Length: 278
Image (cartoon, rainbow, N blue to C red; front, side, top):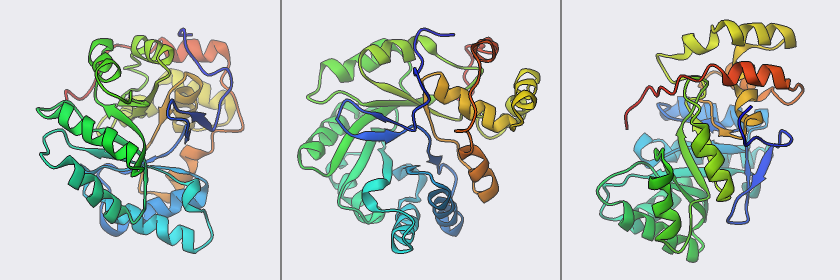
């Protein structure tokens, strides 16, 4: 196994901001309109308490609507739901964008805001995020799509507030353990999007021979083995789906544990190859 992994399989972790963040959530990339709202509502009803969105996705309003509906229906309370959104790096109005996200989401604060990726205005956007933390509009901040110690270090050394989370493409075939291990020493968590490889690549993950053998041994699905691996390996993760059955399946990973031998077999699948290039 890699150097860093959770000693147990926690449902939440304490960020360097002092706030608790669930280790497993719902990703909403490509979900829009009623489909998005229904998926988020189904996730909250299932037991998810982390919902991930972004301004770029164009679905913050639908995410907010679903959360409001779940609160009204007694499924959860606002303080129990951890909302993540992201700011694009090319914006020239980050302060206004944060206020707009608050309005669309229908909340008085956002739990985590990420700089969505590297762009031409990174420092300006990140400084606005720091200001918003001080104004209590945001509780925690982080970055996304930064893959090296050097690029992440800039946000630790050169700003008032270090990132609490780095959200990246991570999956069985691209584990980037070196960054995860280094980040852990900085009290920063790595969060995996594309835990199944992303659209167009799920087949090679869900039909992988090693994954299927381990799934059979536990009486679980391939998806559940992969989600469980992410969390046991020390990652946070946000599998996305619009299917309520799949959403529930991805969350049903708390009643079993992968052995050290199984974790080693899954770790050995790492090829160091990402699918995206942003």
